Amino acid sequence: MRVTELTKHNAVTKNLNTNSEELQELMVGISNGKILNKPSDDPVGAAKVQDFRTSINHSKTLEKNISADKVWLNTNEETIKQIGEALRHVKDLALEGANGASTKENRSTLANEIKIITKDLIDLGNKKEGKLYLFAGTKTFTKPLEVSSEITDPVVKFFGARIKSAEKIIPINQSEPLNGILPGSFTLYLNETPEYQSEDKLSQLEKLDAEQKADKPTGMEEAEDAKITDEKKPASPSIDETEGENNLPKKIVIVLDGTESIEQIIKKINDAAIAEDGYVEDPHSPIGFKTKIAGDIGIDNSIYLYPTKGINLQFGEDTTGFFNRMNFEQIGMPGDAATAAKAEEGTDTGVDIEIDPAEYEAVFNGFSKDNYLVRVIKGGTFGLAQIIISDDGGKTWSQPKVLNRKTEIFNPEGKASNKVDLEFKANQDPFFREGLEFQFRENEFVKYKGNEQIKEVLVDNGIKVALNINAKQLFKKDPVDEGTADVFDMLNRLSEALKDDDQLSVMKSIDDIDKSINQVLKFRSQIGSTFKELESSEERIQKNMDFRREELSKLEDMDLAKGAVDLNKAELKHKTALDASAKLIQPTLIDFLR
Image 1: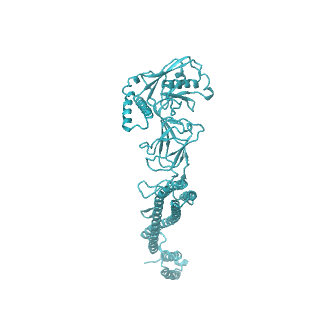
Image 2: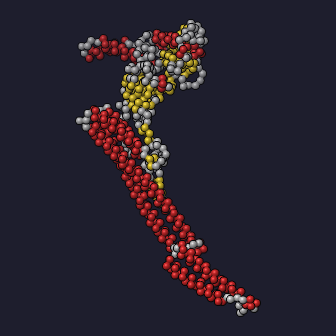
Image 3: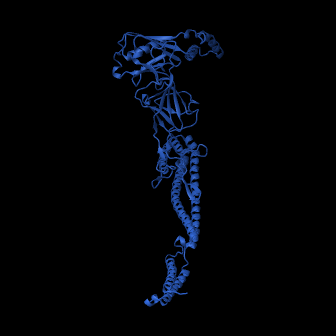
């Protein structure tokens, strides 16, 4: 076979390139310590390397997150530890206040210290880690605890009959002649319902019985007393006997000459109602006498007509234009003015009407988790009006009590609650009509503004743990766990009891203090368990990363000792090839011309 110079040149060049490439790869591997520098070096190994790197990076992220979570938990644990210490100090103060040897002045000092501790606990509940609130659930930018205002406005409603004029008369015109009124008369029908007749007859019997007892000699024997009482009672008219008389509709007729002011018209209505009922004095009536209807000018400058309970008010004939002029309509009910109603049709005015609290300038002073209802059952001013109280939505009511300018609201027949006062700040003495109701809506001492969502963090593949504890868990009562207590409710009651020198209430609070301490300890131990789990996960992640790194090293790291030997061999091989090639290829013009 004929071998030309070109053939030798190509063969030499190819072999030198191969040796150079091998030498270059060894030199690159020695310089970076890797045997896998590109996917073509080992396609399967390159895929495994990518998986190992991804897993290691994920583990690093988890490790970093766990480190931050441990800082968060450390802050939580330290804060909860301080809360527990504060509550244990509260117990020491309560035990001191419950001691019979403690004086009123000492208990007052203890009450002030309880208030300071309460403020400290609120501050601890609002603790931050950086810009994030610790105990707000997942609403970490929301301040979790907020102190409520001690003063709240009531919802004031009127349960009864009340008719209002759509037309208003401003104060400067109330004593001036009313425009648009003609000489004549108008009629108000006062139909007595069976409810009114029953109450009226029973009151008559009670009055007669009281008069008989007052006339009875003091030394009379019980048997004789019963005999006389039985003899006198039949003389009084019974409900059945007088039923026929009350079937006829009663009415009052108001005569006007057309020059009266609204004040004079209201006075004529009230005077006629007083005369119709026989001038019977009644301190529980807004006009001082027992009447079936009363009129007045409201704070909103509207005209009001109040039928007594059990009286069905009807508008009769009006030749004065008064009904049309005042445009009477029923409060809370849409529709046309109730003018010139037919006597046989009647007007149902028993509606639930919400009233502006400013009319009585009433406020509730205090904190309670209950919703109170305070209902006037006997009209009057302060010291005369009587009220009943409910703390369960009207299912049970207290015994009647007198309404004063400041009245403690507590239903002894219901469940125990905090101290709340109904206070009236009006300078004058307003009249409280039967049927008025003041509603106190739940007003917690400290409200929780966060949420109850669990903040779960990933600590390993598919493994999550709950990281957060919210202030509601720490400080509020769990409805399904009798071993918990409302911490701030307890502190408020304890402070009030110490302030009022109420030793018995102070003693009763100790059980709730113990519940509060146990409640906090429970969540402190929960944080300890979570912290331990994070440490265990951190250890597992570290072991996993070590294993992955070891496997990764096997795939891509070079054995430097072996690499150095291989590099020397490759260098020698390459140098020898160059020397041989130099001798083999000595081309001249004559060699190429052959």
